[in-house]
Length: 330
Figure 1: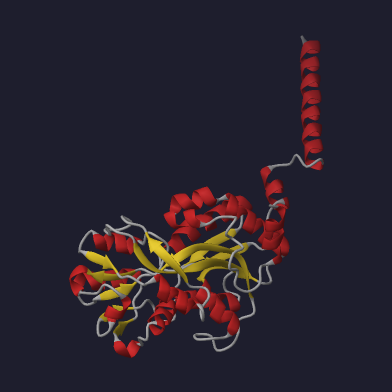
Figure 2 (figure 1 turned 120 degrees about the horizontal axis):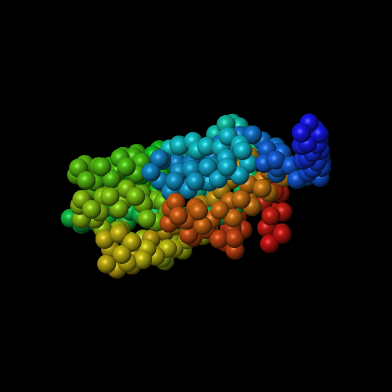
């Protein structure tokens, strides 16, 4: 009996030794725990703050899903920072307060060239990808008599938050039609506030430029009759000679309450990063971004227009070396 107990104890000790040795071998050969794997496949930075836009807009909805993905994938502190404008996003990046941002290409072009809202060129920003188009949606009350952009003269019009991407392209489009702010009764309002103003009757029209569909416009269309104001393709083409980031765009019938397609303008969005993020980090961030596209599309329909094929089209400024390495591998 004593002998059996001794043999049993000896067997247990030998078995434990084999298990410990096996575990040790796995660690040395890379078959480690999840924590070690995360460390080797992680990022040099431990923070990825993404500047987006208004809380209900596509930038923030898509950006929040992306931040959650980065947190899970790389065990970093990734979150979104809601802001009022592309201009604000670019200034935050120049100040080193965010690592990544969604911006409109017109604001990015102006930042790089030190124009309009930027007193000097911004140098600390590189591009990862061209994204989906930001569609200029000029919304008017159905009984306002407004059908074209020329009809906005003398009307109460929301043009977006001051210095936002929405406001920057609203001003450019209006100027291209020979209209200045002095010809309008201008209010600087974001999506939700502009929709509230239309609903309350304190506004006649509003620029709500974003990916399609815009949640504020969808909600508004359920409470009042609205129309989408037309911007002719010929006029957009003329404006694009001086501002090449503008493209003509057709809003399909049925996106909102519109029974017919409506021509307007659009400006591509861009995903940008700080110049000083490492090539390896930006390579991984870019790779994960594109591999996560199905998840981003589920979060907001606008992401359906993002593609690997279109990501390098119309790049404004410098493409980050990490993003370039990813594209070169495809």
